[in-house]
Amino acid sequence: MIRSPSREHRLSYAARPMAERSSQAIAILGGTGDQGLGLALRFAQAGRPVVIGSRKKEKAVAAAEEVRAAVAGAEVDGYENAEATQRAPIIILSVPFEHTAGTLKGIRDALSPGQILVSMGVPLATAVGDRATRMVGVWQGSCAELVADLAPEGVAVVSAFQNVPAHRLRTLDAPVECDVVVSGEKAPRKAVMDLCPLVPGLRAVDGGPLANARAIEAWTALLIGMNIRYKVSEGVGFRFTGLPDNSS
Ligand SMILES: NC(=O)c1ccc[n+]([C@@H]2O[C@H](COP(=O)([O-])OP(=O)(O)OC[C@H]3O[C@@H](n4cnc5c(N)ncnc54)[C@H](OP(=O)(O)O)[C@@H]3O)[C@@H](O)[C@H]2O)c1
Image (cartoon, rainbow, N blue to C red; front, side, top):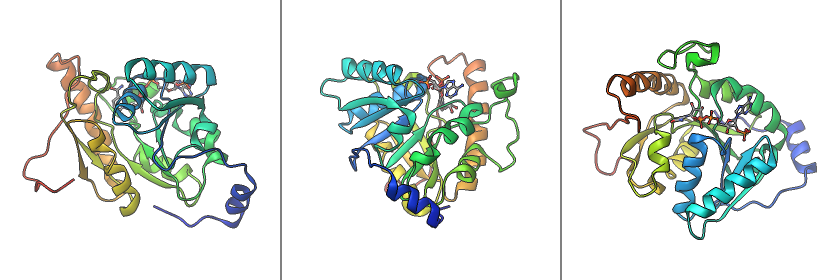
């Protein structure tokens, strides 16, 4: 849900020095991890400026160097999470579910109205020491709705990419044959859907309102179980049938 910014937030935003921001940039917080680095590599390969965020700047800088080594001409930089947040209109949260609230707390003051925050987290039961094939309940209904609850007013939250396997993202010479269900308010949802075709093989599917993230997040636990049962170490994805050709 996009809420209009409160007066306090508008004022604190106005008083804040604006970091250099490219309208094409994509920031990935936790971009040092498996999934975040995979997305960073793919977006950089597609020619988009990428900003990698980490709790530690030197870790983000090292991850950015890794992307540059793998993708010739990549436009990528690494910063501490709050600084990275200020450098892109779209920010992907790529930290394990149990660190979602803590990470958001750390970047809350760096966010500004109009930015889009992408929730990719899944409340897997590993958060409480149980199995990755099970989920834990979230009061708000899903990780994405938790993020929306914690995000400042005026920041749109969109759910996406939960079911894209990291291993396939990081295998740069092969397409990632997978549908991505994107949920949230219409305009920011469209902006995030537009990121999907940057990765060869990824197709965006319009997932409607943010509450539908409940269904999509739950699929992740199912897919992890399928990876185990079918012994697919690269990770299985899914495709919808019957959608019109121009659906994404
Ligand atoms: N792995 C997959 O195949 C996959 C697929 C689809 C979706 N996802 C989702 O993508 C997100 C990231 O998954 P991942 O496998 O990349 O996770 P990960 O490698 O375990 O962790 C990602 C990053 O989270 C940060 N982090 C770790 N501990 C933290 C803490 N205590 N507080 C704050 N940040 C912390 C770290 O970044 P810094 O140390 O640099 O801060 C780390 O590099 C998760 O929400 C996951 O559900 C993963």
